[in-house]
Image 1: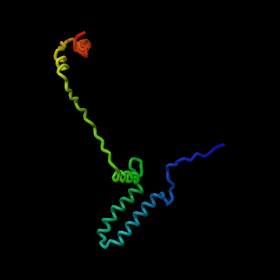
Image 2: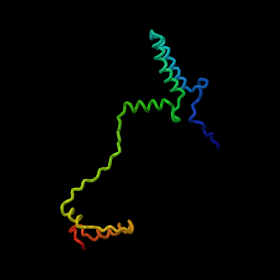
Image 3: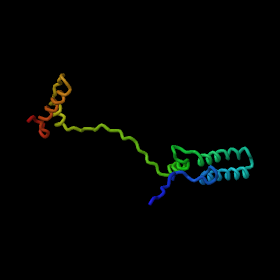
Image 4: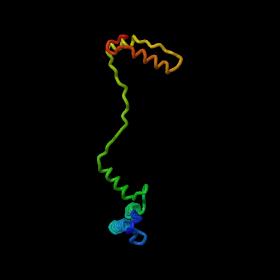
Length: 143
């Protein structure tokens, strides 16, 4: 038994000539608003100034796609951002730890003098680890 799998499901049907139902309604709404403004605003210069942004918005809603998404999705996201709560996130700067060393710990650090070896960094590192490892962390005495 074979079933027909629908294809092109993301493409809307063209109902009014080359326009989908959504495009037709956006354009009809823009034209309707333009006619209402033209009839009720006494100065035709002011009417044209008011009609131009409405016509541009209706055209953008009908035909403009931003990053592959319809313009209405962008308008909806902007509206929800405008009325919604904002969450501000910043990069937290790492603070240098403030050490309040006791006198005993400060004296123990002053006592340990690690000689600098010039042969290589690796030998310097192993030398400093050997010296610090031999100190008792409680009494700061060599074991």
